[in-house]
Length: 146
Image (tube, rainbow, N blue to C red; front, side, top):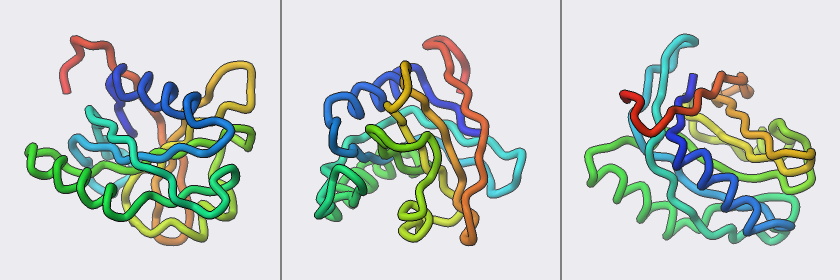
């Protein structure tokens, strides 16, 4: 399960809309749960990262320097990297074959913001090292405990 603050949820959708028709990408910070099925991670920070992919309309690649800087800032603030966000401006609301080939962070959440429907879809999948397993997303209200 991945809990997102309302600010992170809304911010990831806004970023996806701003970047369309190209894919957006970013880093999530907060508190990681374990790698078990029922473990819960909580994301209270979303840091936008430039997409430097050669074909940004159909794939994403986080700018390495920006990614590292944001990950360091998250850790310096006493938080943990929870996962990553990218968008599918017109594609399916699920990991693509390219997403599976490129995934490397075992046990981390990969959030996809899909804009192809009438309303945005925000889904999350945890990378197992062999494939993606969909996880439940809970969007927390501003005064919800972490």
